[in-house]
Length: 353
Image (cartoon, rainbow, N blue to C red; front, side, top):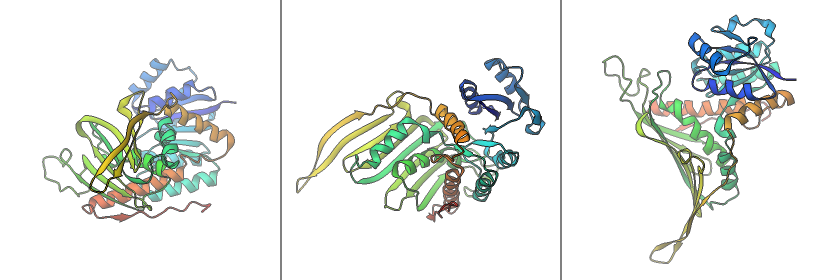
């Protein structure tokens, strides 16, 4: 029996969700919702949608008679809470684009609501299903890098510039997810500093830390319980597009670089030998790690459908994991507004803790 699914939002990312569910043998697309009628028309033409698929500009206009079982939500983050809550109350399983919401309390409310309704709430943290991230986790946690020293990441591009959230909320969640996954830990305190050049009001000078200011450039420091620190560089106005993350250890450095196409995961072997008055590099060579050629979003959609059929929550990307990431981002925002002061990250307790 196929799962009857509706896709809410068919912009840059939602169109990929639509494509994957159309191609999945266990999914039946029954509705597409977007406020922009032109996007709906593009979907109809591009995918030659069956006449039975309901196209609507208003979520509430979808008739109950089409018997939706699950929804995939790829709308702006500010709309997530109301849409997800409404879908869960109607008894639908939910796959939500990240972040889950922009507020920790709302995230927790949605997690509890999903459990009360006995419905799956999954967050599309796509990197958690990327074969390079899964392979990298094996390397880091097997001790292949030796004693871990520190991590770094750079995520930059020249636009698009968001008008609803700053560069921190737009970009940082990806690298947060990877570091947390590879280390098997959550940061215990965080720091963030930033600058705003682009969106400072209509001709008026708005201070950096004003709520009206959306930082274009943010530097993040994450400190984990083991003392490991990760540094993240985020920027919207850098034409040097980068998607690079590394973890450095005493025996080597593991690099995940998405700009390297088919070879994104490289292990740089090497260590320093103490020769009394100097340190000498030893055993230096690079190893390209083989990874499975698959689209991570396809895996996300498949896992979502499997959690519905098995009635078991996803251990990789549940609503609770999404809530914890929003907690970290909220603490980073607090630090950013306080000029880089360290902020302790409270741990969110799940019901089974």
